[in-house]
Length: 252
Image (cartoon, rainbow, N blue to C red):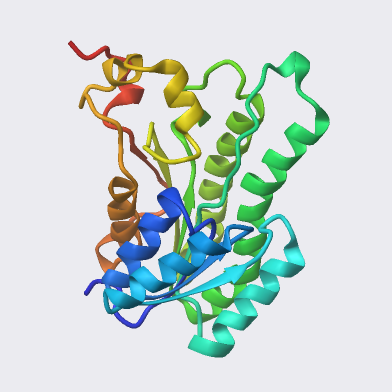
């Protein structure tokens, strides 16, 4: 087990990519505290699923955009399980729409959740990890940071900022043996991407050289690797996991 006895926090953990990461970390021996905002049924079912498989997971309700709530969650996790070793910032929202018609609240909620949530939880654990002189921070970005579509100014801005934030924080924490990396998924088959996938139809698969949509497990495997000892000499990187989508080729 590559993460045996590690304590991990995964934001946005009850569904989609986050759910896949929670299950993968628990299967690798980590104790996983995951954050959910409102879907308690999904959170409870995930805890039950992990427990039945012999793993350890606990759900914490929290709005990642609230800095004080992030601090309280980290304190609660450490009080129960001890020092946090791994943080995965996965919580995110989309509010797609052309910029000229975008309302300020649609901009703000995306920036405050995607980028602000990443800041809040990193801020809550960074000093702790630095004092421990070990730790992993993994931020979930998106290929939209570099290869965006119309209607995604808010989302692309949040993910582009996460990439830059990841690199800058990696430099600051490297001297304390804390690595900071990001994963940029492509089209992953989740509830959040459903509307985009439905609009594009079969065109999406033609754009992906591997000719299939990604699954949450594809991202979870990358997250396990970056959290493991195998990735000890990797920091400040954005790992693209998109089936070749960002290469710009059209599958034939």
